[in-house]
Image (tube, rainbow, N blue to C red):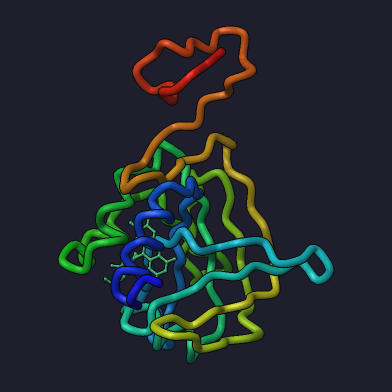
Length: 183
Ligand SMILES: Cc1cc2nc3c(=O)[nH]c(=O)nc-3n(C[C@H](O)[C@H](O)[C@H](O)COP(=O)(O)O)c2cc1C
């Protein structure tokens, strides 16, 4: 049996092998100040009612704000938005988070990325603490679709583009193609 520490390490390594999308979770506090954070823990929960889930670390700066205001926007990232990943995932770069002109305000307050593949607005109906995180379940109140559907994919600590292996121009020998037996 693994000790808890080595189990956590193995799980971390396993999760580096799980490809995920990335969102920027955004919200606004009572004074109108925007908060945000990169997240890959989001999943759609249900279509009845339309709902989403995201897990937020209790020490993230956005955490006390979502706990109070109980709403947020999940901005799905595409490759074009990859320059925003670092500011939204590094505390030291917090001041650079909302400097891009791509940010707009929904209903005059909630920041969302108009250029992103989608912006999903949620009213948070359940907040469940588990370990270091709070699992936030949000009822979706509005969805805005952006100009491109191409996703940014997070895998093994790096942002990537998705390759369609069924596309006629797919080249398995290209440097980005997965290695291994293709027979
Ligand atoms: C690709 C990626 C996914 C992440 N997913 C999550 C997540 O789902 N939940 C979370 O709490 N932090 C996640 N983080 C870490 C936060 O983005 C990071 O800790 C951020 O700096 C927290 O905001 P703060 O610096 O304002 O406290 C992720 C980081 C990256 C790069």
